[in-house]
Image: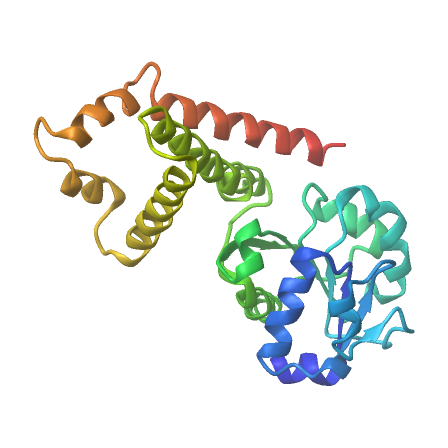
Amino acid sequence: MMKDVATRGLVLLGCGKMGSAMLQGWLSGGLPPGSVWVIDPNPSDWVKAQGVHLNADLPASPAVALVAVKPQMMGAALPAMKALGNAETLFLSIAAGTTISTFEAELGAQTPIIRSMPNTPAAIGKGITAIIGNSRATDQHLEMAETLLSAIGQVVRIETEDQINAVTGVSGSGPAYVFHLIETLAQAGEAQGLSPDLALQLAKATVAGAGALAEASDESPAQLRINVTSPNGTTQAALEVLMDKDRGFPKLVAEAVDRATKRSVELSRG
């Protein structure tokens, strides 16, 4: 599969932070720089130094064209790729808010298209990306997308395109929720007399460690919570606040994810 990509070529439309993270993963995994074409008006010095084809004429039938431009730039960038539509090139999009039907309208209904939603931990290879293909995307196309996107973390398949909105609300926007938890946990530590640097170090390490434990453990997050909660102890005292059904995490997080999901729907409709 990756041999086909190396032979036919891969086009990367847009190479910002996310595109660069993927490119670094592919090159580290053995994809030859000469098999990659990058289209970007303002490439970084790092991209310039990788030996890829930069803003050059594209191959006639690349294996994959990965669309990694910002949604507001899509209208200007995508027409340049139209010649690759309605053919054998797989279009893989990581652009938020741009629907499969939008790509089909621009590239042609016979174009194999996979839409994906990654998240920002992809920058350090710890992301998770959800994918969904159109009717022209085969199992082989989906496997190719999984292989490429695994360079930046885990990959999951969803059943319908509208689930992208819920994915956005949970994992797409989710890192910001966690960053805010770290921020507020550190502030709470300061309020109890800790120095700002120490409070932040404790908050970062606690969230990172708990997340790693949750991912590595066979036990559910609920059971891990129970394991750490001694009867009438300090954790129980805190959880009585955080788990309050009227003002705690369950209500706040549900409202936050619902609002993010609805906003994702609004943005995809233009």
